[in-house]
Length: 197
Image (cartoon, rainbow, N blue to C red; front, side):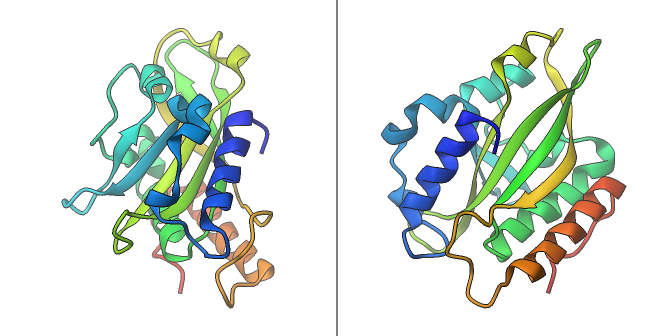
C-alpha cells in the first residue's frame, strides 16, 4: 500500500472488524477517517443486477467530472475489462477477500497515471446484505499532469491484503494467491470469470 488514503482506510476497516472476517457498516466511524473520505466510496447491489456506487467521495467525482452515486461501477473501466471487474467485486464479497488493485487511469490528451484502489468487504447496517468499501487514490503530484477528467480505468495488478488477518476460516495464503492470480489473468484478458468455487 503506497498511499496514505489506502493505509488509513484499511487500518480503520481492520480495527472495525476486530476478530470477525468482515465488519458491519455501522461499526465504521466516518469521523475517524474524515481526511480520506473524499477518496473513498461504497459499492452495493442496485436491484437491477448491477453493482453501483452507493456513495462516492468528492475527490473521486471530481476526477471523473461527474456525480458517481448510483452509477454502475463497471462504467468506469475499459470496455474489455467491464465484465471482469464485476467478477473481481464478487470475489471480494463471496470470499471475504480484501484486495489491492494497481490501476492505470486514462484521460484525454494526458499520459495515463498509476493509481491505487482498495476493495474491502462490508456488511450493511442490518448485517444481511453486502457492500464493498473502497478508495481510489494516487500522489497529488500525479494529478497535476491530467489535462481533463478521467475517462477510464484499467487493472494492472491485483494482490490480496494478507497483512490484515483474520482470514476467512479454511482459506490458506497459497490457495488465495491462486484465486487472485485467476482473477487478475481474467481481468487483463477481458474474460468474464465465474466466482471461484
